[in-house]
Length: 157
Ligand SMILES: O=C(CO)COP(=O)(O)O
Image (cartoon, rainbow, N blue to C red; front, top):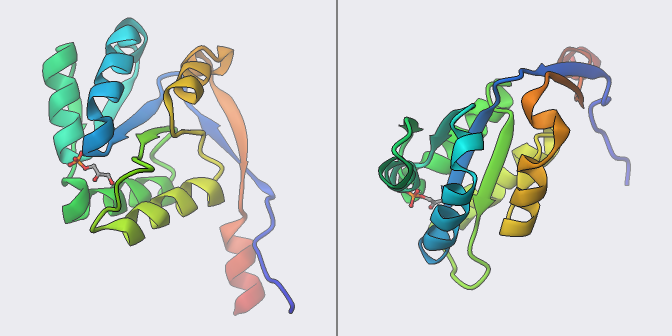
């Protein structure tokens, strides 16, 4: 089977002030809130957004501004995915619940696919989220490699 994929040949600069999406399924929300409280001072240096319910609860708990998109089951995961595709998201912290099937499982899978495709750093559990936030790259501009979309389109036109 022949396989076609875009060349990983472009660079994108993640800014010093990162745009960080925070998302948790219901069974993981308390865990995310406890994690976010621990990292409050660090998170306060960055721009935060999230799916509707998660964003509201993080904003209430931490007293920080968090841009709330649509709730996940109503399309929020897809909105976050669109931000990734538009290169407007720099980090994804998504505590998805391995024990609870979701009505919007296809959207969850689509979001994780786009994060993998566009090389966005993702943490799906507390230990990885700790690693991400303690990275020296968090507070500095950093270049990542991304697919060359122009080349991909040209090669198919
Ligand atoms: O379902 C979600 C992610 O898949 C999260 O949505 P809420 O933050 O609105 O609960």
